[in-house]
Length: 101
Image (cartoon, rainbow, N blue to C red; front, side, top):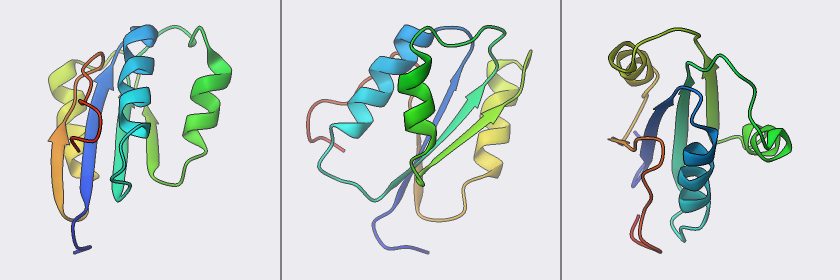
């Protein structure tokens, strides 16, 4: 187990603006020992595709595309990718307070 690590689990389906808010919130934290698993059940492409493509390049991000999956199925899948430490479910559109992670 990696000391003081956190895996953040997020699922979403076509709510790109809300997902962007969540990602900005995570990236703005001073705590950086996190992993972010995103289960993408979307049927459309992101409106600000360059923002999401850049985020996918972060080594801490695991973006998994699973079209037409329910939210509960998506969270079960995301949990199966957690390898260490703690995990937290952060729904798309939910944000952290500054430096509260």
